[in-house]
Length: 253
Image (cartoon, rainbow, N blue to C red; front, side, top):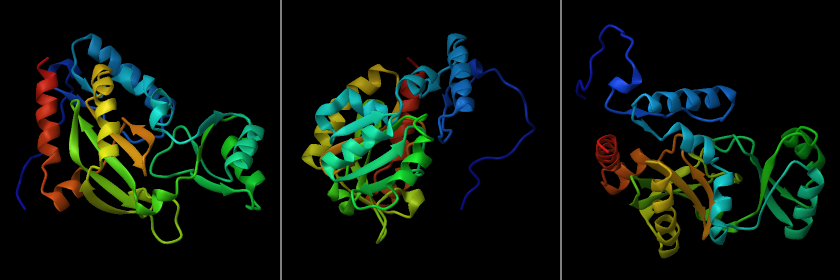
């Protein structure tokens, strides 16, 4: 309802000449994405202020990052062997499997021992034991939402966005049709977020989105975490202003 920018002629500008550069490219984290982070690291060496940093995005895989904080996770397996997944399924009876480079719920499957398609699903996802995946024990609290908790500049946003799956759907991701409900953080949510916040800041991660189901940390999103708009609309908390202030503060450091 207002003109907040105007288009002008395109010009080429060195990244170091901007006050800040924001990396907001969606996964998958493929080779093209890797190249982008490497170029951003080179730009940083020339004086560019990049958030999140290329190094942080390379080092902090969104799925594998939770292994640094195992005190907050459900039983988890990372493997290239379908036999390992079958053994994990036999032990837990109900599991989630997912690729390490996806987003928005893509490639996520729920498996139970009675599923007639176990072999086909594992072959498809693991590409005949040549692709590494993650398996996690199924967390029933997903029916109450996959909570997105935002950490900005080392500070925890006081509201989470619970992404509630549609009926008959396991995934709560908004991209998979989940319904976003903003809510205050629980004590457990805050414990997890306040434990991770200093480490994320130390690694140069200005913006992160933690995924929490029940009392379990399931992912640490550092590439393009969402949830700003829903929290702002439902709770009248200006997440965007908090982010902009953090960018200005970090760019001055």
